[in-house]
Amino acid sequence: MNSKTIYEQLLMAKRCFDSNDNKGAEQILFQVIELEPQNVDALLGIARVKTMSKDWNSAIKYQRLALKYEPSEIHILSYLCQLLLVTKDFKGLLKALLDFKGVVPVNLLKALLIRLYDHYEVERCKELLIQWQVKTSHEYNQLITSLPQNSDFELLRITYLAATERFPNESNFWQKLANVEARLSNYDAALTAFDKATSGKDITASLGLAYADLCILAHKLDEAQKWLGLIFDRLSNDNHLLNWTEAQIRIHHFNGNTKGAIKHATFLLTKTTVNGYVWRTLIETAENEKLANMLEDLTSSLKEVSDPFHSKMMSYALAKGYDRLKNYGLAYDCYEIANRAQNIHLKKIGHSFSDVSERKYFEFLKNINVSPVTLHSKTDEYAPIFLVGLPRSGSTLLEKVLAQHPRVIPMGECAVWGNLINNKLIQQISNKQPPELNGAEISHFRHSYINAIGNKNIISIDKMPHNFRFAPFIIAAFPNAKIIQLRRKKEAVCWSVFTQPFSDIHNYSTTLPDIAAFYQQSYELMDYWGKSYPKNIVDIRYEDIVEKTHKTLSDLFEWCGLNWDPKFLDFYLSNKPSFTFSENQVREPINSKGLEKWLNYKPYFPSNFS
Image (cartoon, rainbow, N blue to C red; front, top):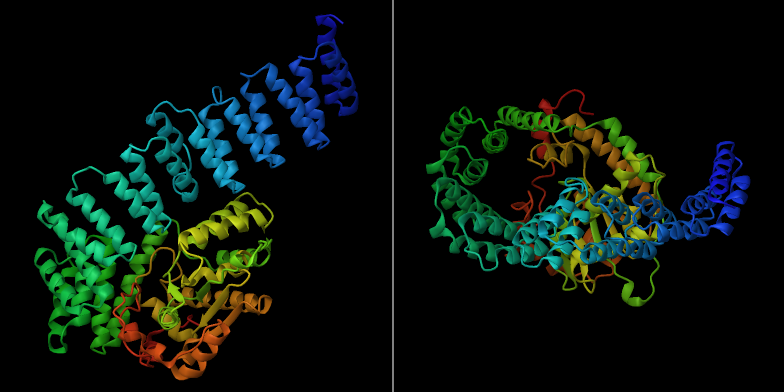
């Protein structure tokens, strides 16, 4: 058969394809291969037939042969990579990419990195990035900047980790890794990367302030204080001084050092009257006879404020002051103003609360098929404790009591589950994929969480409230997990949420009707999880902790497999810092002062609250 006849045979195969006669096309193409084994068009045609019949192994075989004879053809390599992804032959995919890395363009590498990460082949992502022969850090940076920068920080983290291994002396990569770790709430890792980024450098005021801020976020207050002391003589402008003093106020707040907070707030007030931290500190600690004059000064200062954030924070401070004076009408108005400012901000960034969207999301969560991990030995039986529910439901208080037990370590509000699972679920919703998390994905979540905790030989407490959404995924990853769903009277918890300056994540927190809607949907979801996983989930009412303290807590400790000691109620005598809005409450014995506070504001509740 001469070349002209082969060409004619290939045309006949094409006509067979066009008429959906795949079997006829395959027969003709095999005849071509017998005479010309290196005919790439025939090999690709056979790979196409095998793909249509889902004979993946044969399709891969002929695609590899085609690539062998035409190693510079990117479309052949790209199609081979797609087949290897379909069959989840990640080892083969990695080998193919590394074998032909001289011809793979950055856009194909980027696409395959994202697909590998989607399959939770994290180590293969890292291996690919490390072995990729990039000549300069500039070329590597081009690859990184082509990845999604604001959605999947875990993928960026892997990429920057590989970058720091490939170019260990590039401080720019260490700095960016520190930023990504901080976005993922991996503050200890962020501090380590920051150390590398600043190694051998003169520590400027800006760098020192950034490091101190990371230390505060990592709850390393002594370290933060040390750095603030080191850079004091380097504060070269008023802005540095303001940030330095604000950091001092935050540290004193967390440590319960009222005098220290007042001292620095008073000083900062001589430099600027536009600062929410300052006014909050002074309003909360002012003597009653001085409070009225202070509120007048704050009201005057508010008129000069153009910054939306400080306007909001100062309005909250003003509300707290009027609350202390028992002028509940004015306090309510100030809370309204503060929340209205936050609502405007949420609309501007496209993150307003939607009752309908939230309900759809919760229904989506109920329908996800979850494959649990397999525990191979006793050492795998890690049993973390999760305190979940709406904010302001008593999680900080309960964490303080549980943490009195010598086997229990509090981890604060760990963002790992939200970061990992939300990214995956949002991707499924966007791509209209079936709601499913397989064993590999759940195993990835498990290992990522244990890495974030740092020690699986302890009983950790994670008090991130919104983890109530992820109960099935937590139980799939940790079959022995204990999930405590905290409940509180609707009016009390909704009002308490309304009076606090929450972050943008809590987009439901700016109006009482929205908070009530979120409350209703959240409790319905928690009811559903409680019935579905009775061995792992227990409900605890905040009111019972306050009014039936010994019975409620001793029963709860027993359910957690921990022995109870009444001395655990002396938690408030500890000097340990508190990092939530409940910082003042947890420095006192358990009491009922806050149970009915909402009644003072009931006359001002909107008619559509219920």
